[in-house]
Image 1 (cartoon, rainbow, N blue to C red):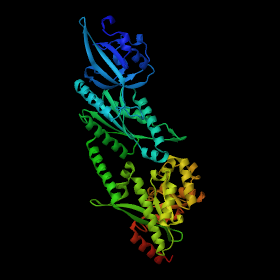
Image 2 (tube, rainbow, N blue to C red):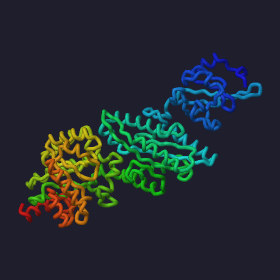
Image 3 (cartoon, rainbow, N blue to C red):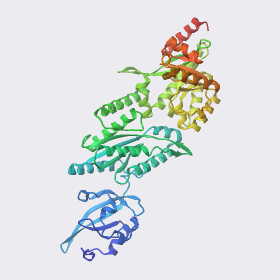
Image 4 (cartoon, one colour):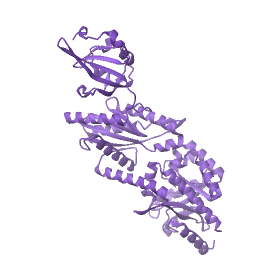
Length: 541
């Protein structure tokens, strides 16, 4: 077709406040207006005769384009500009030859996430549905990869939401680097993303995409001049094996993602039937947890800690239990991971801290020998910007002296943000709070930083104690940790001591304190009071 037969002059096209392209029926560009040239950055000679798909992403099947659809304009500077396309509004035939007119307008962004400029859930649903149509027609395979950042709430709680937004923008950039322009990355909301990977040869290709995304997280992110390492967990569902509808594919990929988290995070998992059941149970558990907070269904149990040198009980550790109305008494391992994922751990942690302080004040008011109450902290709880003020407030409200409160953190918690941890620990120490590092020896601590942590005690993880009777390596490690702690003027607690032989060995390793079933299992407060009073009577202390 010659340009002269098109009954629209350049002057007329240039007056239209939108990008206009005229193509033949095969999609070859015959005319464009100045608005398109300005927005795309190309000259007319660079687009003339080229196929429209070279400049617009989302026209793989031009016959399926609806009257109004969201597409992406690819500029000469390699930018992607969201546009709304009005397709095939005018099919004209001149001298026996037909042509199409395409009109592109700036998209109002309702199909795109304003923070990352990625497609949103609404746009993704349409993309998946079109992918299903193409895959059915071509008998091809595609994958849905559901991604969730591991412990993203920790970043928001610690650094603030502006830094969280900055992290999400950097994550979206790295994911696009890993996936390339062939596949689609969308943001579902929060810290959840989805990759739609089409025209795959086999499932191994989907796994390769997941690995490339995970590899993008191997380098640290910079937030507030702090280098922070993040990981992501990914679930993969495949069409047609794991579903033939968009919602089913997304649900199965989401469930597989939670399976990856359960297996340790920073990995991918493929959809399985059992993941769905697990996800449903998790949803029910999260709903029950919210109700449990309102209905005050939690209980505190207390386990005494014994000074093996003078045979005195010096503290008792507060341990949470959930008195579930249907399932009975639940241990922390059955609900704390879900509380951490859902963010409910902050409310639960505050309840434990306040309740433990109230019980210790009650203990002292009843004229009992002064001891401490120890409270385990969650990572997000410890690094909240107002955590020290919160501790001050709870101590004041319960009229408890800081000297009777012990806070336990894990080494992994402090290593996530060392400088902030050092500052928080120093502020807590200034309050007069007793500080312990729990589960020592199982995390990723740097001994170089240990001297900077203003803590009083290292608690040797029970994994070193349970086989100390049979394994000489456990004895050697226990001795090494104890020697290191004493050189740093720190006390040492051996956790999980259950037998007399274990007690004898940890004494030989010079541990200062012991906690475990050999002396007492965790007890309700009233039972703990009686036990400690009786212990003092029996030992004459």
